[in-house]
Length: 319
Image 1 (cartoon, rainbow, N blue to C red):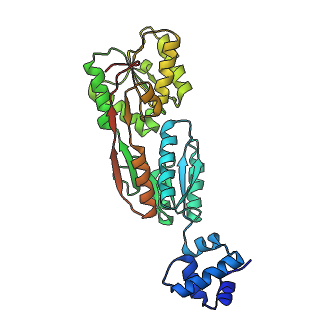
Image 2: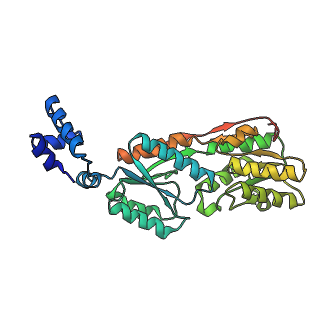
Image 3: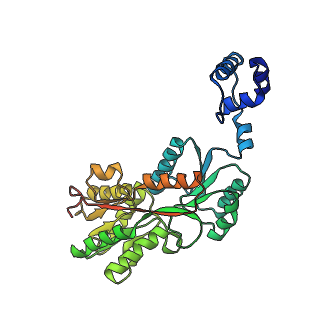
């Protein structure tokens, strides 16, 4: 297999000139470029991208740490990161963890080994202190509000739109307000935001019987609805943690031919548009783009992104 030295010998130009032409990192005259290109085509030369990455210290690869893909928050955010990375000429590797802190540490160690140009954590279990200790090896970005922690972060600001949802329920004089959540309060910033906003609006915590955790997708929403209808007083307002979950809740109520509660979802997925479900758009395209930019440019900044409450009327609810 031909190498740069072979191309230099066959083209009559120096190794430095051939290297500048192949790597597109300096001036090469038109005559030299044409001569080198003829030789490249003749010998069917293919650049050794691995060697090039080692020489430049870059892999053009971003590791994206994702607990799992069943929850639409993670799948949407991963898709937006992937799109932004590809547009910037980078590859993406999905690093699944299922919230295993040891796996997360292994991925941080792989950053130390230069397997990635940076890591984006869509969520995490490993401590921020551990992340900070690895920051010297490459950019680390978290997709949540880190407060004063000096790690890069970009995230959707949820409090305003969560307040809007609960204020809507309060004005509507709903008597039973239920929430479906991913994880419990101590382990999820999004759960904390939802419950804190509820408490701010109603001046009390949500009723335990109206709060269901471990809800990730359509089937979980369907089962949550079955539970809600088993209560002596089923809720008349349900704030779901995704539109797919909201659709599962709706389907169970319809199958049981029970009066439909008002349902609000999240993520502005296609199903919410088809079913006219009110929802929150967290603008993950912008969050993903910001995360990739923070990695590529090695910035340690916090970039909030405003979310948007979208009110719809239709077969599920009229609010």
